[in-house]
Image (cartoon, rainbow, N blue to C red; front, side):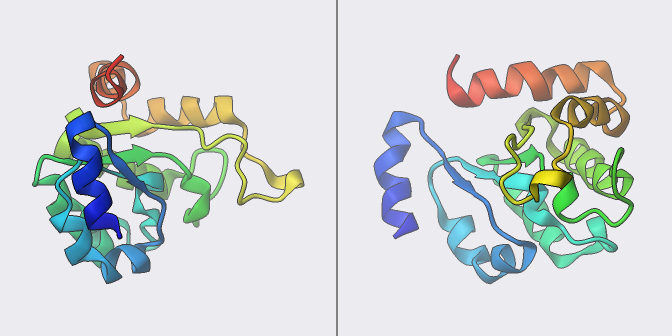
Length: 156
């Protein structure tokens, strides 16, 4: 179903966004690699901690980034972090590694209203944006992630 959809949306410049666990990404690696339209992987691929950049799913996303059509959304660090709030340092290390691989295809998102989190455990969206400054210390790279890249992907 995803391959025909990818072919249909490609002429419009649209993309497919996948919100999947690392295990699900690995299970569908061939399908994801075969898509002709741009692909956005949500929540940094939910790369498990500990392990991060050494995990097989990170290496798979790294290979997808090499195709030039894959983007990664630096969002949802609370989904996999073991170091926890407020900085989610372990997930931040994964974000930095992805940005080092393909800063021109990184996006950021707050994931507001945080539908996977209990009402009494919702992250502070403003703090999540502040965390990006810790994860990605280079201001020009953050500008790409927050301004230039989304403008290019979404056409605005």
